[in-house]
Image (spheres, rainbow, N blue to C red):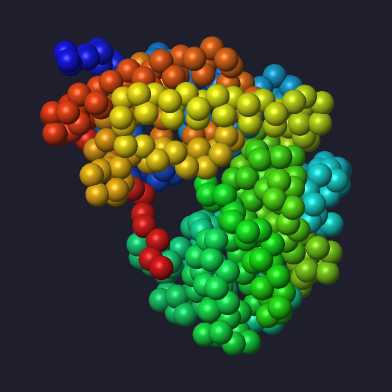
Length: 433
């Protein structure tokens, strides 16, 4: 089989901007998951300049179908007309004020209408704002400091101590947080048994794995049996799995939920929502930010919720996601590519495996290299938006098939490295359980 060759992209301007960034920005990036080591350095673009719908353009003018979608916040598509128009109107009226703005009330009321657990709402700007505020409220409500957790919950000290990027965090935080395993209720029971009467907060996300035997409901019941508050971190799943998030899909009602990505189609806003008596803890905890009521993001959230109400956004995302997953699985089987496809249609994950069943970053790199050269930008999770068209899916599957063809050549040759044109992708950090 002849080796497939596709010309490399011109990323001259990206490289120039990276040189400048490296001189004035530690790590060169504001968001670690967007750094060049998360893509194929030397092959992939480093700086994007604009987006429209499901497509993005880099600083060199290369166009791509985008699947990381800004790490998940883009739900409808870049520059979605009604959202952009709402933001522009609000920008002329004002972005932040000396007193509160009616949009704070209106959007809070809308969240209470669509999110099953929501009776009251507080706004933040980032996912970590919401998860940290929810934990603080739960601690205040229960009078207990210790936390049981499952999944990823942001960069703040209480959680980041569990990662390998824990420099600068007082080690005492590690004494207050204890991990349990997804889909294993006994692991949570074990945490409560090992620290009796101390766990006041159980926080978890719904990852790219389906719950078994009503696991989410089990977590809530176990938490309540031991007097703890159950927090569902829906920063990723909120408004993407359903208007009411994962709790709507899986029929669970947590005490508190954290919302963010997808809520305003890319504008910076997050929220803690939940049961009234638990939310009233916010009247005594310190959670107060200058930009908590920033109006352009609230206007974007209202406009996004309007689109969700009047158009089949969720149905489209599930349908297109299923088409993409089915096509990828079919191509992987045809080319005998060792691929594990995790998640579900709104959010998938592609894990390429070596001969021992471990994740192969070399194969992942080769896949990302060959797809980006063909105009498709993959990263970590694969997010579908309302703007991903049938043509996008078809073009993507063509690019995936060609990438698998090259990967098959590398596997048959018994060595992936000679096929790589850039550096092997890395990981931002690992959690320490």
